[in-house]
Length: 117
Image 1 (cartoon, one colour):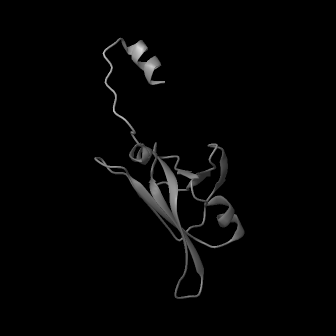
Image 2: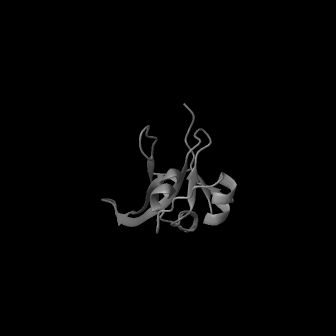
């Protein structure tokens, strides 16, 4: 089995780094719902720079892309500070959409699109 290295992308989808030393990394792909992930690392300047809300996490061996939504710093039993980020896969963006008004159009597809825009 290949070692899973989380690759971090900024909000412009540019690769800004790789997390190669983590405490735990859970990557859950789901069949019927949106998948999720959780990554725990030690708190240091590199990890604080790389792991920010709304940044993306990908893996070379998976087609999914995770969006960092939660961000928490805790202290473990050895007095080490641990940064834990978690979130859902990009398909979760569909859950964020807001439909203000429903519209019914009886016309050609091209005219309907132009009217909606």
